Amino acid sequence: MKHNWICVEVGNWYTEYQCAWCEEKNKTKRGAGSYKLPVDGCAGSGNIKQVIVVRKDLNMRKGKIGAQVAHGSLAVTLENLDHPMVKEWLAGIFTKICVSCDSLDELTELKKKADDADIINALITDSGKTEFKNVATCTVLAIGPAYAEELDKITGDLKLL
Image 1 (spheres, rainbow, N blue to C red):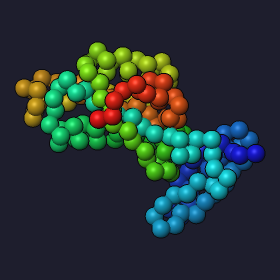
Image 2 (image 1 turned 180 degrees about the horizontal axis):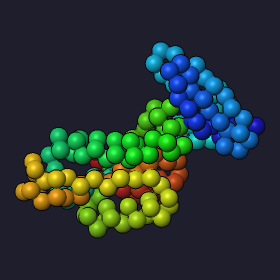
Image 3 (image 1 turned 180 degrees about the vertical axis):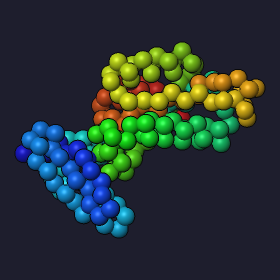
Image 4 (image 1 turned 90 degrees about the horizontal axis):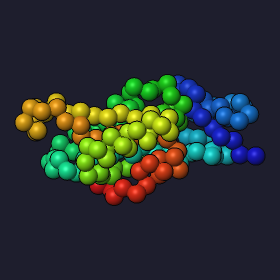
């Protein structure tokens, strides 16, 4: 039987996992600066990602997009450090996918879908100091980390940025 490993603790020299189904525990040693999942894999290992949705109707410069994407990813991660999905994602390779939407209405609808699915997310509002003529503007929505299958139900039809 394969386990559904969830990261429960990250120490200086180890990462501890617990199976979500049978509660068996497993510690792996951290080597060469990387975390490794237990050897038998996990229903979710390698299958967790974060999706960042960028409003393309704002015509932001590339540097602005990069900053807003970083704000979104950090906000949802730092606000949810104790969330089991964040712990497992941080113990992996932090997969992020950037996609685009066409309007604030579409971004708001995506946030509602993420909230309804109980997936952690962060909506970023830029202060408007460098773009947007000093008007606070919603720029990106970071959704997850969550299982790819859950995120694809919400963002699977959006185009890559």
